[in-house]
Length: 117
Image (tube, rainbow, N blue to C red):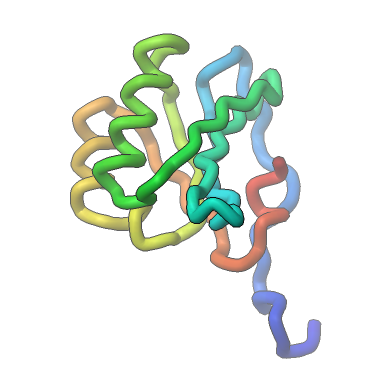
């Protein structure tokens, strides 16, 4: 593979398929939109169901608030897959995941195919 915008060792596109809904979630941001807002997109890796939250702020605290709301409705997942963005690798996010017993699977930055979604 040539050196350029693609990582030398990208994540494999295939991953273990969850055995039921809400076990493994993939999370990413879309935006900013023309309004200045961003969309927090959460995808259930089993059903491909999506939950989209309009975010005026994409701080770790706001992401955690959104995830808590989703968990209250759909249950707490076993794992979450994210890229290595600042809000997903912060100490606060790590503590949140530990508190809920969620495994964090990080994908290669700037390689959205790694999410498989």
